[in-house]
Amino acid sequence: MIKKVDHIGIAVKSLDETLPFYTEVLKLSLLGVEEVESQKVKVAFLQAGETKLELLEPTSVESSIATFIEKRGEGIHHVALGVTSIKERISEMKEKGIRMIDEAPRPGAGGANIAFMHPKSASGVLYELCEKKGMKG
Image (cartoon, rainbow, N blue to C red; front, side, top):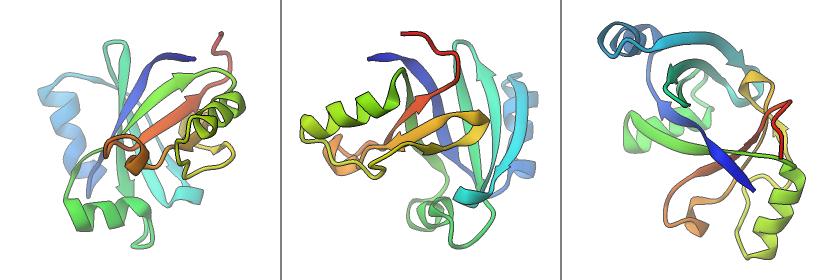
């Protein structure tokens, strides 16, 4: 079902101000930056061993990331679990009584299909199911 921790999402106020810490201090490789207009965020992916870090900068005050930063400050936002057959995984979660934020997969960064579980169903942790093209079962 779950193949790996695909990435850890980190909410930041500014990619320009935050990236030098990751690239110059931690010496992580920047894989790319993209804007996900549907989620009102700009994201930067960095390679950290087998896992990626996803820095999320809000592009609008209406972004869920902007709301998160306003309430909790910058920091870890979510843990993304790499899965296969995301529609089946969503059904399994719902069968097990897990409340889903996303009842169906939606497009995410990097061409992935994503769906979030509600943190109230996961001991306060926001988990993202993440299916990428070519991920094998």
